Image (cartoon, rainbow, N blue to C red; front, side, top):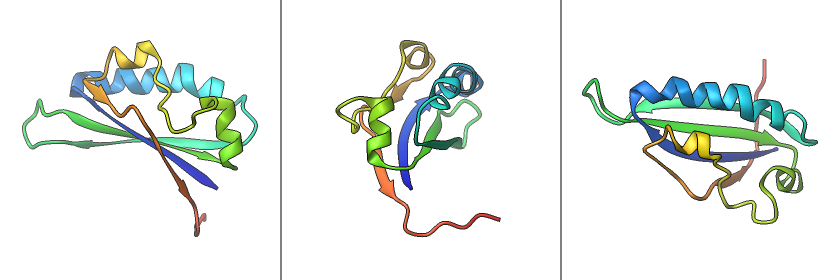
Length: 107
């Protein structure tokens, strides 16, 4: 299994909007793709003040690098960020990382 990871920064007030975008627009498209195995969106504060930016990490799971081409196109290292998502983010990585799973535990 391949894990595709991507990070972005958002104001706390925009995190829910990003997650809504991901859930309502991105996930329906991903689930149509052969080889897509699921995704998680996680967050962590980037400071201790109430208004500190939040780091958002998206981890999608794929059967293979070849399957990722169906989502990302020919250059799978480039992040796929729709304008609606970019509009609620302060910044985001332009590239992604791909990790090969070597051990996985599921209940």
